[in-house]
Image 1 (tube, rainbow, N blue to C red):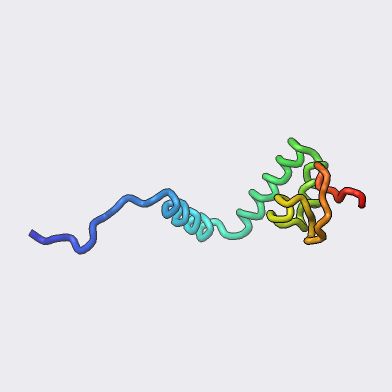
Image 2 (cartoon, rainbow, N blue to C red):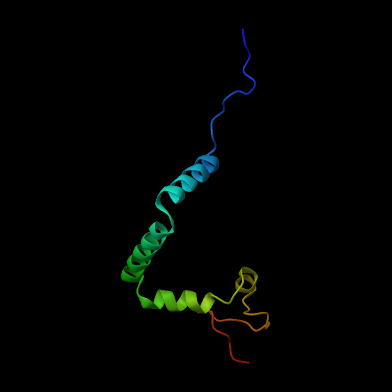
Length: 88
């Protein structure tokens, strides 16, 4: 009886996702991702409004550590609940 040199094993979800993602990217190309990204952005804008994008734009310059510490850009100044610097 011949012994298989390598037994087949189940893929993890991560491995299956990676393989599937590469296959879709190869088959559909970058234009597909542009189209679905735009479509998703339009849907978010419809649901959440323009204030949502203003808020994430304000947060764009912050690191996670800055947000956790309540400071922005390493200035050491505290931020209020809206992510704006407190006076002083």
